[in-house]
Image (cartoon, rainbow, N blue to C red):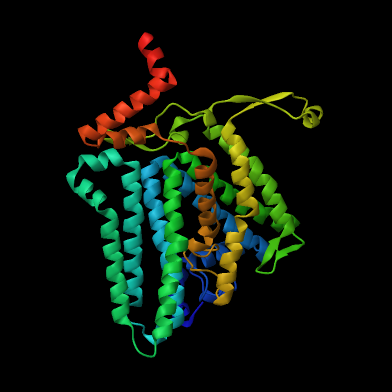
Length: 439
């Protein structure tokens, strides 16, 4: 943590601790040894509570309970926002994205704030606005085409969306050039690159999370839950059985936790996928209903979410005692998702650990006591979201008839007639139209 951030945290933490002292009737000396310059007041308060009510607990177990309580609180919050629906989820994703961007940009600002670079923060937030306008505009146009075409202002914004986005970015580019100051050229270009790499890592991948969500909430919930499960189970296996260090970037990570987390996550992914595949609200894509003027998640389940019977390999039949098993095809895909979350996902965390070590900081921020900043919790999630989006595009997604029809209805009458005649001739050649007319 850098001097400026440390001083600000110390001031805030000191005031809060003084208030806590008055309410509890204790002195600061009675608090367990925790660095108030680095830790959040809530984290110290929880540690203080455990020290009083469970004085025989080792510090290692106190930390286990503090992390456990806050983890349960975050999981509860996750369930609540899922219940509120896809639109709320999309809003939460955007809020998380903004906070992650803020945490990374703040690190750069704290390192180089003494140089007094002109417009650095202003331009960083301006570029964030431009990129979000571009990505979310593309998403709305793609998934809610009918709604956009109905409203004249939205239709105009949609038609010229990319030109407007480019004009906004070009304005920021010109502002950056005008802000260049002699003696700081290299540093200013360095921070310009810092901002754009942050946008690439955070905003682009947040946009992919939104795309996954619109494919069906199951594509949003299962991958995120697998990463959470792997994080928890790897910590627990490492806590109880960890002996062998895994990687130097994260000295606390162990092979025992890594392997135990893998098997637990695969099993969890299979069970969660089985439960969620039976509910249309999770499996259906988010679409706009013209009749009700609202967003719906109701559809006829695809083959991915219909129970099918699979033959068990002969090698395993003698072990399990079954010849066939009934399961959802999505469960097979969940194995790929949970495997990635367990074996490759943690490398997102290792990447973040290397970044933090480069700047000699423990966490991106102190937003969540015992867990660090929001970016500390989402370093693996962003990598997972990119994989899920690529996986859907490569193995799942096919042509969407409803989108094609929506686009067809926006064409001029002569264009519609041309497509109709072409399609009719094609169906006649295939012998399909004749059979339909005979019927």
